[in-house]
Image 1 (cartoon, helix red, strand yellow):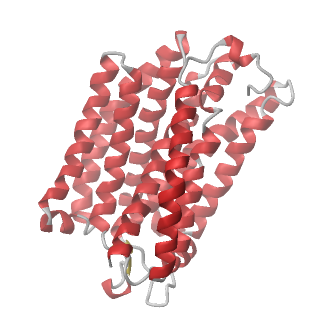
Image 2 (tube, rainbow, N blue to C red; image 1 turned 30 degrees about the vertical axis):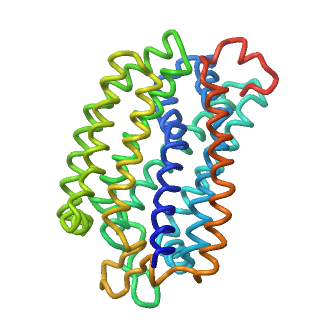
Image 3 (cartoon, helix red, strand yellow; image 1 turned 45 degrees about the vertical axis):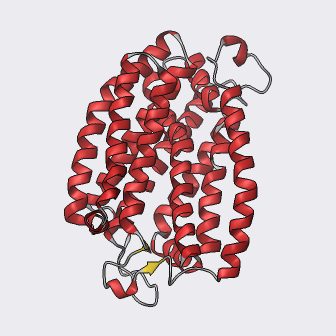
Length: 342
């Protein structure tokens, strides 16, 4: 049971790290058509995340791989139940990745407009659908003891699911705008700052509504009432959210970005802590719930995986920290003239 509990925590942690790292990419892409007024500004935005976005997606592969290897039953039922939204996310991510490389291949406004649209949609759609998917997991998915899904895609677009999607989009917009404030200057930076200030009160309102709605729509709070210490997760997320605004007002942009990262971590673990030990709960019958204990791989598999994680994850983290430090400076016109610039 200890191994299963450790892997449940790591499963949640990997999803949280993915949302933190690729979240600001999604946020930049979502605001891209609204604040990038000229081709130079749009290229600046692309290059602000260009050296990092593909490395950030390693965490998506890791989170998906851990789900498959550590909890194969969950992987099977999740991908059959949430097949349509997950495939939409996959296609959107492919379009977004291709848009980075194809946009500057032809000097044509129409050509660039197509790939700008792909970049923006490929950023907004995953942000929305990840939120919808996880909100539905929080309230339970209608599947039976055979893992068969009793519903359709429209059932996933319920009020609570959509609320989760909106929350994710707003979190990522805040995160992405903070990143742009770090890596841009001039009018583009001022527009990004304006986004952080306008988005923040809306984010706070939606976050409060989501917390209240979670009490009525999900069983998440059961664990919190049994173990009141878990309320510290919500407290940390709230403090970090307000710290984001405070640091923004002081123009301490990296601190604001870090605070928004902690907010995303807190929001993710709000759900993960409430779910435990459930990984994929059924809304039809609690007996059908897939948990860390009834859906895990063998203890030997979990031990081998834990050894691999202990050795290699610190290496990946060290590399990404180095990359973030290396590309922390403002994107300049000289950067845009480089052969490998987008």
